[in-house]
Amino acid sequence: MLSRTAEYAVRAAILLARHYGDRLVSADDIASVVGAPRNYLSKTLNTLTRRGILTSVRGPGGGYALAVDPSELSVADVVDVFEDAKPGGPRCLLADRPCDRLHPCAAHQRWTQITLSARESLVNTAISSLTGTLP
Image (tube, rainbow, N blue to C red; front, top):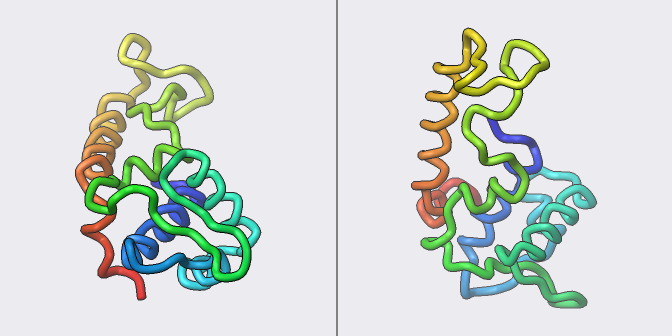
């Protein structure tokens, strides 16, 4: 349900959480661990830096670190940088048209429940709770 960019961003945040307060991690190292193309990931990391989720240091010995305590950073905080956070979405799941509670399609009610449930999980999951998932 996440875009590839949001997934890479979450993976990077988890990796950086494992090194929180310890050291900077280079973009190359992050790309290698999360399995993302370096140039693509660099844009993602720069976006997270501009949004205040990461800090960065240029040059030799530079790299990235979380700017937020990983226990205070939710998965939703990271995902929302790259995804539209509106449950149910503004477009119809079945056709290319607007879809909302006033003009629902046949799938609208159930799809809204699914997206709200998924959203709740993202909001209630701290990045720190996922740090055992990456090397």
